[in-house]
Image (cartoon, rainbow, N blue to C red; front, side, top):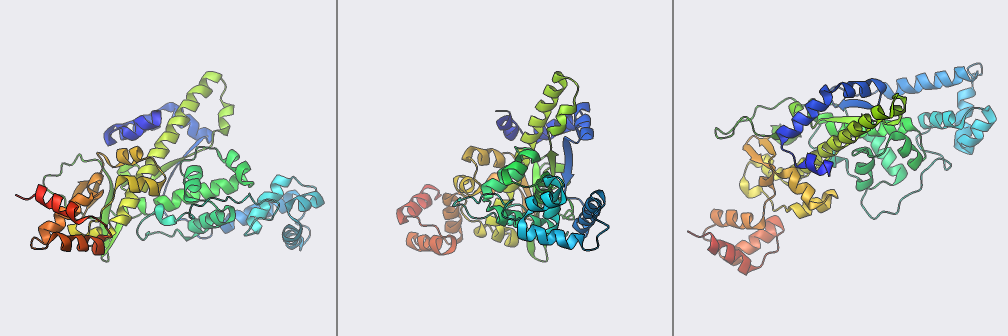
Length: 395
């Protein structure tokens, strides 16, 4: 119920709620404990970051277990992992299995049979990373997308599973690590990568110069902007909207709080932060889908390029309830080079398309318009329906 209220809230109320959360001393305490991390897409993800982490961890592992005295120790460990798996290597070295599994994650591109999670039999298609970010990002996301694709292929994840576990983040990394039979660091790496891909173009893209219509008030709840780069439409979420940010949540440190009352208050805030994450992810996915479906219009500015797009169809494609999509498009605006419109404007009804075509081709017969609808938009509409809408709106 709390999530529905937050999703239904106006942009002004939602942003005020986020400001109040982040100004609360409890939020600062949770941040200091490591329960909450505020993650956005600002800046580059260095290509050598992974290698630095690998070198540091491997060197520490070899030193702690006195293996650095043997020049070929790392090579022999890699061979053992490939041929026998981490359990056998841990037993041979007499070190904790958790440490060897973490080392295996760094050293081996694919998990061994002993650590691989069961494959799902979902009939859903594999996730498409275009659902997370639209347009050409202005910063390097290749490392992040590689991390996600490797994990998705390894565990045969569907779009719904990827979004539910790594965007909505309902479960902490420890729970996901057990579910996927991997390490918490591996789970956090995927969470970070998904967040980075989602927000890569959000904060790094330059704010475009957009012509506002005179009648558009400055107070419109603009959640995203479309601009043209080399003639190609690009989508960006403005920094001020907050949709380029996520809270990475790890509730395990809550046990460090002294009293049950403090833990209860902290758990309530964590639950609210999860709802904020959900609203942000749903809003971003709805806007990204609208952008992809109406991309021809954003490239041309010609309203005849707007295609029919029902909210029910969007809900099915996103794996959300129709009421969720309805709330996400109501009272929220998209700024474009052709004006600022409510998101609902891009959920075009077939009737809207018929009337627009009729105005553009006033001399066409109902049958000709019916054929044009089928050839241009893929709409199969009865001729009598075309005639009905033309007659109903004829002056």
